[in-house]
Length: 105
Image 1 (tube, rainbow, N blue to C red):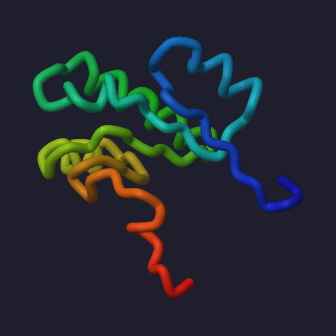
Image 2 (cartoon, helix red, strand yellow):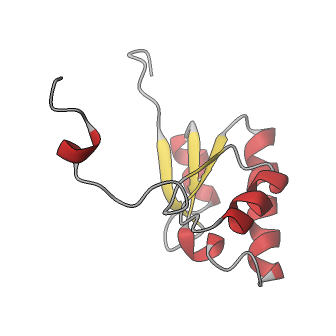
């Protein structure tokens, strides 16, 4: 961190990415797994989990990133829950690096 490096805990809420990892690694960002995000429109359990993750993260001064944001409704719900950043096809489809960065660089 003294070199300006930020730590992100990826796929939070799935597999081995859990609250114990937050204590161990003390990340700057928690990336909420897409398996929770993709069902948020119709699944109150997923919505409650994300709300809890966001609440905890804010208490610890950790930024949150939601993966798998596929439409405006999902983005709106996440914004209302206080998620800091979102990523997914709603914003842009996946692209090759050479397509993303202008060749003049």
